[in-house]
Length: 345
Image 1 (cartoon, rainbow, N blue to C red):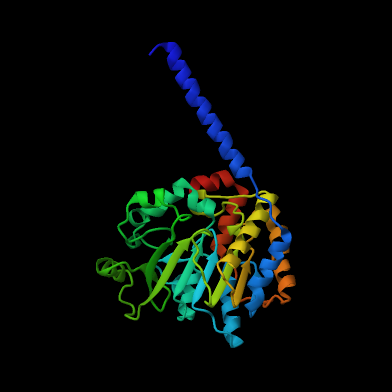
Image 2: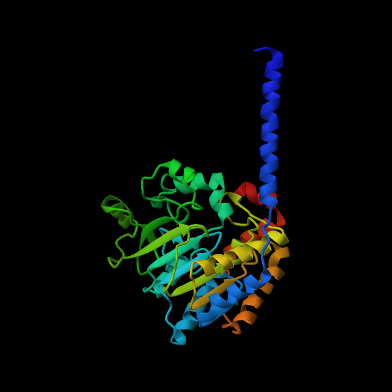
């Protein structure tokens, strides 16, 4: 091949890469049109069966909401649907030992509500499509096997599944179902089969043979199943809609502009309506450390709209659970020196 032909080939390749890059940018900036009246009607339909709606600051305050329900003779449903950038579940540690944090509140919810048998973690589609996170999701069983100590639930743990499964089939195409064991102290590990059951059971230190099974389904709006006729506890963390990147795995962040945020709200609500989710308990969390500051007002306005349309009042005014000091200190470090913070984790 002559130099001239070589230059033409290289120029063609570079042009193709440039065109694909432009297309990707255009696709990421494209916001479909939607009807605000449809949003309002969907909110009205979703909240029609709600017995409790509460808006709060920190996600562990969902525990206060569950306790409030029981104190008012309202049964906490057996299904929890959590729209969140984080799983809020920790493995291989007793929640009773470390205390109730925003990172492990679901462990404690399961301890106090043994009737809960299914958890749906709905992560943002952008997180599910991120190639680095897809690889991490697949490799979790090899990188952070539970004997290495406490770790946040993220991905496949004990099952021997090909790396290509999660690279070629992200959670936007297929939900991932796992079964976990939990002891009476909030300690969890995956239960996959007889062999892995033995491996997992070792990590409970034989503290109590009373282990029960919990099904956890990690999915996205695309792969969330239909909930027709099911009673549901719905929890929404605002960092699902726009995430600052603080304290997230591999520093993942997904900050949206105003139009993108508005559409993310519309899409989430539309999904909840289309999947026939009519929750009896609705928890709405702001998570101010995780939500970009310029989006706080918009999310609060959205939460207030839910109360207005549903004609319900914010259920709680006071909470036992607050954000833990370790997270506050990490956030302070993050605010003071983001560059240093990112190099440290």
